Image 1 (cartoon, rainbow, N blue to C red):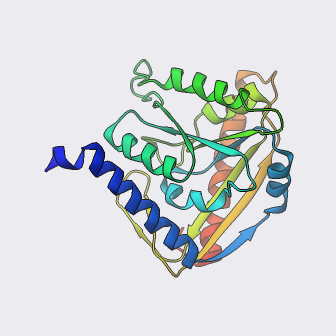
Image 2: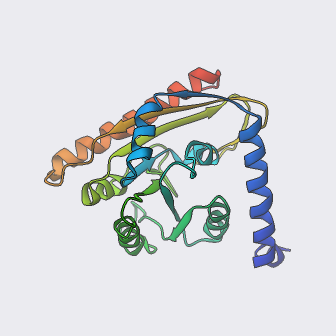
Length: 238
């Protein structure tokens, strides 16, 4: 049974079902959008951008980035079997997927393709055709945590490309929450959903290590704050 579920055909069918279900949830939810005007200006400018959201809310993120008017999106998917499925799902949403994974804090030498994936994301952003900026969407606490603890990868992408950063908080009043490290929430249809945006300047090219650490802590606090605001808007528990 396990080998059957891991087959390419099964994974493709699962991706079709998941994408169909999520789109149904998005269409049947009543959305509140906070501070979207600065984000729309970034969409219109068509420059590079780095988008950040916590891993536990990734099943809501496809609703916040309209590809018909926003930049093309690249996401990072791990090299695991679950990463295979994630890549298929994101590709069906029209996103580009790069495979790799950040290093474990307990074993920094074990990169699992993270360094190569970072270089590929840089190349992908820099290879955008003239007038067509690209977006890298990342979970700074993914794919393995700790929960809501910011890592420096997204900030480094901003620093090296001059891309502004966007933090986005996402919530819905109807969801299933799993007892996983990230407290993953999967939306249910017919809820009240919220998107809370905040736009940030690019990370300065000449930032030193101490300032980068301070900024990383600050951005983690911001990302948690916009998520908490989204939860309050829909009446979901923090």
